[in-house]
Image (cartoon, rainbow, N blue to C red; front, side, top):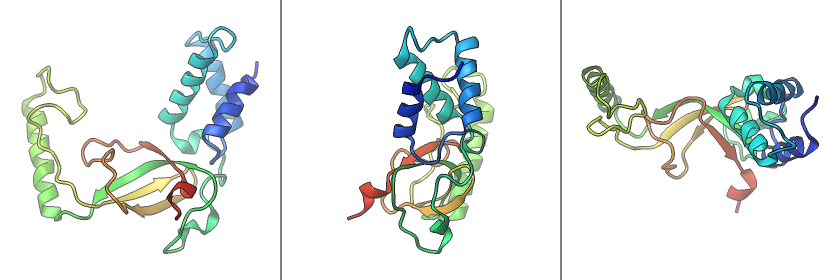
Length: 182
């Protein structure tokens, strides 16, 4: 069976760029039905949530069609994105507003803390456990990918959702270019 048209349309409207790969979509549909025992006929909203969760957990190079996301001129030194929202994932994250030596001190302290607190119930592996050293916050430099094209980006204004040591690589963001233009 193929994914219901409502699900395909909802995903296409919510994540217009890049376009979802048809083979990935079919595989995800089969997995949700066969393994997760979800039925679009019985609970369409739970089924759509399952699709969205799988999409956001996937590597975009696996789930998206090549060259359907970021515009081709985006690799110019200075580019303003235009058009509909583009789903991207963080490939790398670096704080360029803090001295490298300070960031390295925090990294070492975090590794020591985690090594000495392996068996504590407080350490859930998310970097938010009490006592774990936090990275200072400056300006973040990011590499973002739509699954095909990778671009360099820098914070214009602080994005509090993104933090060194806590934001995992692969974190997804839906960039809405028209929302940021004057």
